[in-house]
Image (cartoon, rainbow, N blue to C red; front, side):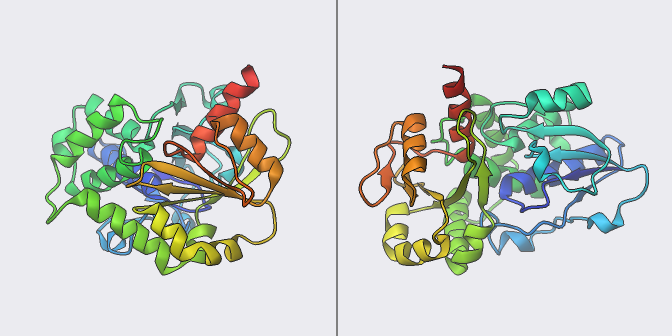
Length: 304
């Protein structure tokens, strides 16, 4: 049995879509596989989507001899201890390419692309199995690509993401505008439990040439300016007094608002993105940024 997994920290829409769609593909080609995780969903997976008919196996059901593919994750620090036979990594986050090449050689596919889901769609395409794809997988992948490319506004967006999106969207029957439904539902999910939304989408960013990891929360809202106006006090209270960075992505406004309580973090983000922070620790970028873009900018900065 091959188990397709994500990190044990949390599952976002990209990890969910990649995990479910890849397990389906493997079963189609005669390789028994299951999506496996016990991580909580974050707010990028709205409540209604959680009622869709995907199946995720608990790691307690794994058996001796099982192998593991991890999707949308390559940082070894985030891999669960129970995954002791990793044979494949499919990811789009930078920083651990050499680590995995040394361990699993060609089993490591880590590429700069908008969505990890796009890499899974390409496996369907290259295996000539697209016509066998379930509408469930197509729906999940449409939403994942929208989320990870920030509605095709993020700097990581590629033509490969667009091709995957167009193909999957053509396989979906949805009553209404799936794009509008997804972003509005995801924003409502964040607002339903703001504290857990932040907890379940916070990561430590390790950026080359900077000593300390940056504790970074990332939230994407359909109307980020209105979201900040209504929730500012709660956001600041939840984030607390320890050093942090908030990346509030405004989808409809096509920008990121960075907020931090630490001057050294502000200086790092200024060096990597060019934004200027005001006295309240707020900076507005001219385009939306993703965490992985900040890490990639740090890698390039270290080379300069």
